[in-house]
Amino acid sequence: MAAITAAMVKELREMTGAGMMECKKALSEVDGNMEAAVDVLRTRGLAAAAKKAGRATDEGTICALVADDGKSGVVLELNCETDFVGMNEKFKAYASRIAAIALAHNCSDVEQLKGLSDGTDMVNDIITDAVHVLGENVNLSRVQVLSGAACTSYIHMGGKIGVLTLFDVEGIDPTNADFVAYGRNVCMQVAAVNPVSANRESVDSATVEHERSIYVAQAAESGKPEAIQHKIAEGRLEKFFKENCLSEQDYVKNPDQTISEYTQEVAKQLGGKIAINSFVRFSLGE
Image 1 (cartoon, rainbow, N blue to C red):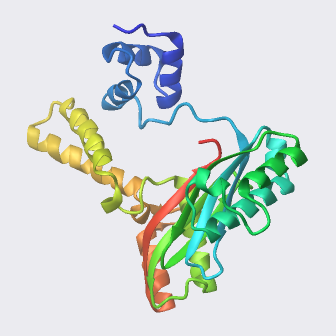
Image 2 (image 1 turned 180 degrees about the vertical axis):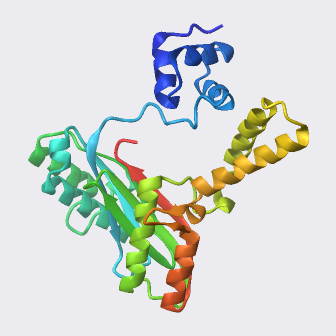
């Protein structure tokens, strides 16, 4: 059996919020497997969900840009050593310049992007220049481009979180000011609530089955008849979808509406159709 160290117990507690003794017991039961221990605690109602451990502590900025035609966008993370440099406008200008290159070349691969140019400098050279000018190590850690019928973006907390959302639209100009305002609000929802997917259909099947197994185990511990256990588990799975699927979430700016209802309202106002296709959310150092 694996030795259960204080560091392991501390990490599990930080991930779940459960008590030290409960964390140690859970780890002992699963021979030190951290993910399995999270599931044990969730099954017992001692942890609502797993938080990601081992987050990077790099400073820097998240940058997001949308093309002039409103049909594509890019979000990237550029890291540095200190928050002081990360909030510096010169540093952010480097990030914006690199983002523009990624968008122009439709590039979502960091290593490939480093070899691309804006016609003047290669991205690698831009990063080197940033190191020389700002006096800190600078690293391009990730980039994602989305393209389709319509795309909007939002940057939160001065570059701590960045969101791109892609939409399917019919009969609506993606550069229309009202649509852009709507899209920004949807991006703000993603930034604030951090959903797992755009809709329940796009939730990874492994995630659905994992959640269902947790709820089935929780229901079994209730001691109620099997038919009731099934209803309890399915009810909790429905709640999972509502809380974690963007389209089904309550709209943070108007909790009387879901995001889907808000979307339908805007589509009607603009005389067309809107559906949320997908989104990307970058949180600094994640």
